[in-house]
Image 1 (spheres, rainbow, N blue to C red):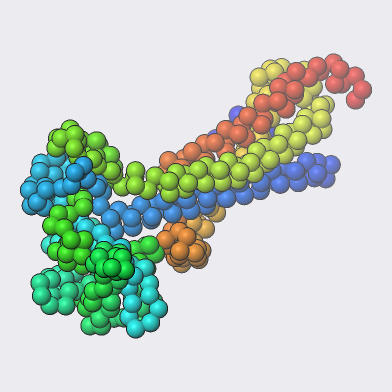
Image 2 (cartoon, rainbow, N blue to C red):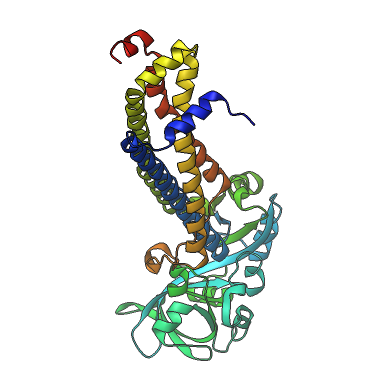
Length: 409
């Protein structure tokens, strides 16, 4: 198949000759620059997308999609749950009561948040039941009456307390008895009936699950503080939260998981954009190198351009030659960067090579997830930038006057 002569000449100019070796080196550097920029940009986008997705999945798995409150307090749990389940897209609901305290097991105390739950209903809302490594969430039913109540604690908290299944711990709570010396903290002993690991440092290091009846006794109440809700579609949570006051009445208020973690995901999105723009400048620098190499090539090929014009080549054809040359450099660099970037993303994700502080990001390593839209956007943007870089040199070449060019040859 015969190549268009513009493409043939563009490919011929890319081949290194002794007099044009310097120009070829600049072209090679330009292509490498584009490849490095594309590789870095793909890795950063995959890193930030993976981090956001992993945090979202773990947060949503450990907590509910929507939280329902009521001004003046909720009514009987069974009635409230029945009402909440009438809201469209709601597939699960469970009552919750929270108690703040200090846990001890013969040594140093550790802050603990006791989350009172109904073990049967909690499994319809969160993944806590499936995250219990030792014991079970259903064991909370044992001792909820007159016996020693059970507690399921996080893996990191268990390590700090030196407690395991079968051991007992003491919990001091702010809700206590009024004495002549003031309010004395309440003290209650619990038997560890399970250890869970949700993969989130906040939960694994400071949360304990008890039966809701036990939590209500500690709070001296017979009503839950709020209702946890699970919806059939994760991203429908906001619509469900908006729909709760409409369906249940103006006394009800709801917050979805995105609103509860708005600051975290906003910070991650801003970080993703800032890093993408910063690393994207590498492609811009490579584009400037393409401009420089094409300008030098135009100066070197002044005589060739004049001869082509005298032979009948149009200004458009001359312009197309140098545009094609710049696009070839940019396309090869972009393709190389895409292959290298995808390969590195696979290796980094497969072998979990990048570790991060667990107490800051809630997860121990960075997962990499490259979305198809991000991949296409980077490739198209890189090729477009390289194309724009060819416009000025190619227009200058097309405007060359053959007579002036050949006068001094």
